[in-house]
Amino acid sequence: MKTTFFHLALTVKDLAVFEAFYAKYFGFRRARVIELGDDAQLVFLKNDDNFYFEIFPPEEQRPCPMAEADGPHYPGLRHMAFSVADVDQKLAEMGDDAVVTLGPLHFDDVIEGWKTVWLKDPEGNIIEVTQGYRDQEDLA
Image (cartoon, rainbow, N blue to C red; front, side, top):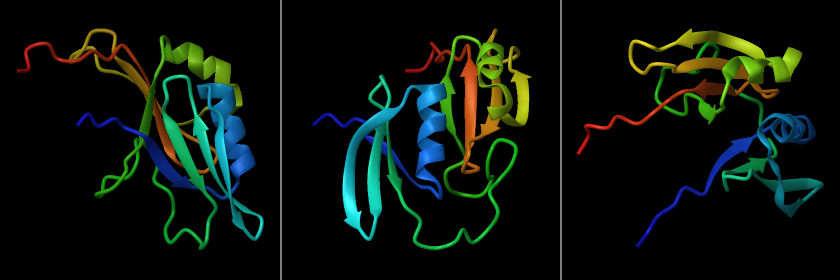
């Protein structure tokens, strides 16, 4: 049976700000809204690549500060990544909304033309924006 990736679930403090950011810069739009009661909603956002965010409202406060740089180095989700044609162009497009936490860094010693920058989204999640990555060809 074929298995495909479906979604990444996140709990966010401000759904409107999160949704506006990902709609504007990464092409996400609402795919489904499920009413949870007490004015709470579960919202699915989707982009043109059929990548989904499942967005939950918070039920408690964050127990520790959000990570910086390229994300936390302890076990768990480190960051999410989006591939673009040109990192510098994406940063220019985002203007002040591009809160850089690390980079841009070049990885030409590994892959010619591979360049990456890490940003914070409005919730403090780390996003990698990368250009030029290619799979290794000599793997079996």
